[in-house]
Amino acid sequence: EVQLVESGGGLVQAGRSLRLSCTASGFTFGDYAMSWFRQAPGKGLEWVGFIRSKASGGTTDYDASVKGRFTISRDDSKNIAYLQMNSLKTEDTAMYYCTRVLVTSSSSYFDYWGQGTLVSVSS
Amino acid sequence: IVLTQSPATLSLSPGERATLSCRASQSVSDYLGWYQQKPGQAPRLLIFDTSNRATGIPARFSGSGSGTDFTLTISSLEPEDFAVYYCQQRSGWPPEVTFGGGTKVEIK
Image 1: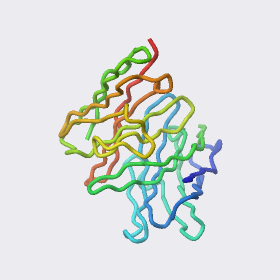
Image 2: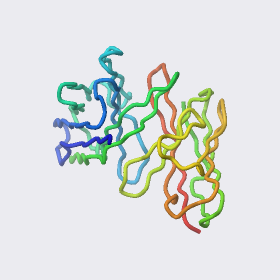
Image 3: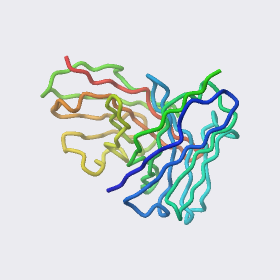
Image 4: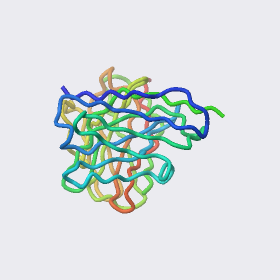
């Protein structure tokens, strides 16, 4: 059974940093790209970024709203994906979800999601 | 690419047919997905590449469309189908993933 478990969320002051972890099980983690999303309270879904598998170069892409502040990395030996968040802003307050990426012939979808971890940024 | 979903809210009874729309600001070919989200839960992938059901998704869920206009149809609503539904696309360049604003299917 595929499982994704996020951790590391909490209350943090604006300008500080936080690192989220996503621990995966039930599949060959290293074979898959992984992605992070967020959802502010009562709002819709927002993509944060993703990291490709090592076989696909292990490269990353980010939404413009977080580029330069957030960094996604992975440790395939531990089956963990990370989201390092620096220079946090109050508008980064959201539930953060880790997902596995389903790659089809020409696009990407997100077929398994964790339960989320809540990040609250205070001023 | 901007995805616009309509209606914002759909009020229906169990057993009725639900038709949800997603319109893209430019063509996304056949590369559109649909997700269901219930309160307090993570989203769940329903449909990928416009019309393919994800693993474990019941046959009452179907997707159609191409280019800029897409539809998610729930043929006969079950009590567990009342939720918010999002459409999603991924662009190659600039690399981005976008969602529509969502359609809430509520019990009438």
